Length: 381
Image 1 (cartoon, rainbow, N blue to C red):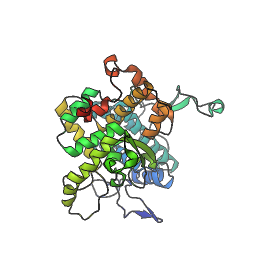
Image 2 (cartoon, rainbow, N blue to C red):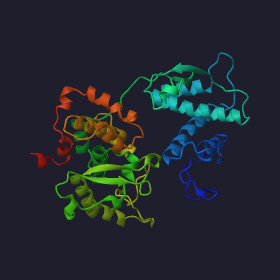
Image 3 (cartoon, rainbow, N blue to C red):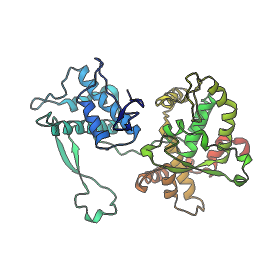
Image 4 (tube, rainbow, N blue to C red):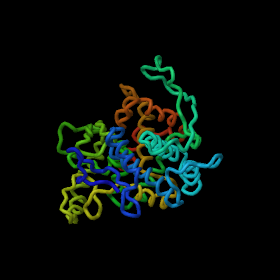
């Protein structure tokens, strides 16, 4: 579970901090103490999204230990698999998690054991490591980083096949729109695929960012409207502000959605909380963390192909980059997409270059405003 605003330590509110509660109703220790040192006391991760993920992942490991009646501090016998090996195999064979997800969880668990050893709770670590060399793009100080290509890897870790982010084709986007009968869900999909928002950003997108373009003389004949996203108004990863370009026709649709649909939903809200987000549930409340994941999991069954909210952000990045590279865009397409996505480094954004280059010929032979035509076909006939 996640703490509410009542968790206050030395004057700071830790709303959203993960609380690991066992079946007996008590905190799962020493995992809870580790999370406090790891996330709060040492300030390793300040994002509430990171807090929640770390809490879920560590709780998953300890739940696995409890289900198999294993003590977290038990050491494997010589030549026998340890807890991390068994957890890895279970995650892969029984749960079906991807290697990247499993390795990320193993790294978190390894940090927990290293912390426990530093705290004197363990004499030695229950796993081994190996030194590997990795290829990477040299950074600004690459010429003085002699060991920049050396990394320590967990021996229980799995090999991760190189894989580009998954995105949707235009036909798949059309299919998703067709099979989303809920007006709110369709607009949320549109906002993510046309502006590159993460699902949490879409869920918390505030009313104050909307306007009626028809009433704004300064927006006349503009195709997009620049909107500054502020962490004080909505949830942004790492609390990092950025700007996005909202298509004018989408802004108009959002404005009328609020007038026609949102007000009716808000009237059904009985908890007395003032909701500031554009999108509300049928009961007039803000969408919870897993809501869109559930919506798209259900959508997958209707359309017959894999689709998740994060794929919409990848779709935006891929097609926006492809479009800008084939027009007379005055700036650097990669920098533009980086800034719209909120990446801290252009190296992160450059992965989409590979995706653009690998697009099938029939996919790239599309008009530059095809995504606009998907949502307003009557304007492109």
